[in-house]
Image 1 (cartoon, helix red, strand yellow):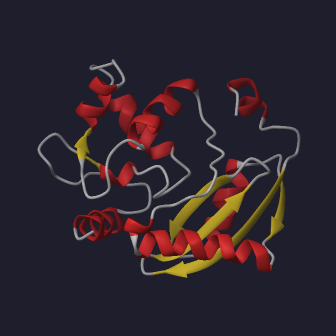
Image 2 (image 1 turned 90 degrees about the vertical axis):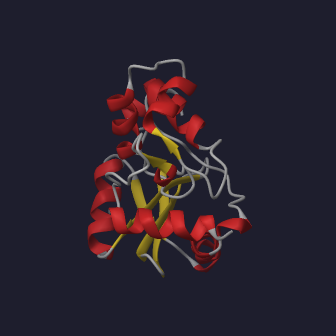
Length: 177
């Protein structure tokens, strides 16, 4: 999505969504006409739904149907078995800077981790470590854009939008892949 459309939130787009369950708790998957636009993790489906509404205030939110449940199942399958990969189109919404960061994150191999500093250097902005962390925090596509693979420079786990324990579980699961 272009930055101007992002700022305008599109013109009342239809977004289909459904909440499922996985080993990490509740998972909300949302899809626009362009692709998956949100994968949110949490403990409370109502909180996830409010988060989706906050992210897309102009959208017409539509509950998922049987066909959409298959998409949710694919995403849950990817969470449980990362080696399967996630072969679904994504609708990545963010600023130009965020998109640069997220593209770099998508290049991190399953089972690997990198530091925020590594990502900053990768995108050619070595002094932007804090901005990298903020872009990771703004990511609405948990696991599809693997911000969980980014750790502190000393290898320690740091903040994760959906909880450090989920981050630890994802990293450990991917390391076994």
